[in-house]
Image 1 (cartoon, rainbow, N blue to C red):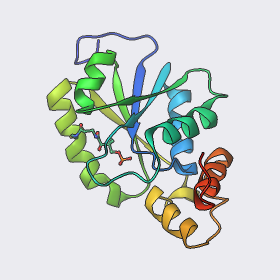
Image 2 (image 1 turned 180 degrees about the vertical axis):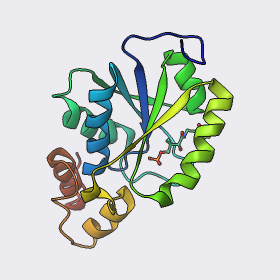
Image 3 (image 1 turned 135 degrees about the vertical axis):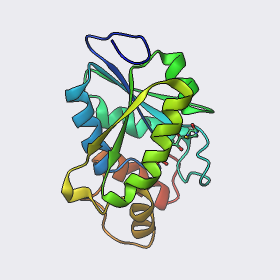
Image 4 (image 1 turned 30 degrees about the vertical axis):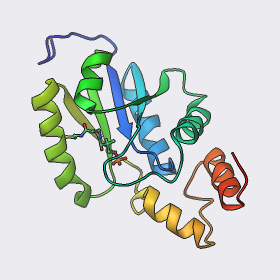
Length: 171
Ligand code: PNS
């Protein structure tokens, strides 16, 4: 039995994020979560508090759907407001977050404790592959839009949509 009173044979995990854009690091964590949990919902936050997203919600969801199409237990959705409220609405069992390095942990720990106090749902952390320890959406955007090569850092559908955006075409 879980602390939230639910018992799951195949736990449902929520994997939230801004995904602006999704990177190979994100996809690596999604794949790891899909092999650990019965069901994974990748949840795109509609209005990240930190900043105005570069990619629309539609683009971010479309990129994630294409990247995860081969994973049968992964769905992509979006949410507004508090993650804790969304997790309760979804009746999910756990939250999953990726960690690239120890430096990610400080902020993630306080967020996990706050989410647990709000929803009584625990956060599970998965380490992304060390190849992606330096990869973040912010660094990928900066390098790409200044003309750098990010082909090894993002999935192909993401590179395609980023290239279309850089070329000024609509996606
Ligand atoms: O990919 P990111 O930007 O690191 O994801 C951050 C995200 C979306 C997981 C976080 O900002 C979030 O949960 N936002 C929803 C609002 C919320 O619940 N805030 C309180 C967190 S304790």
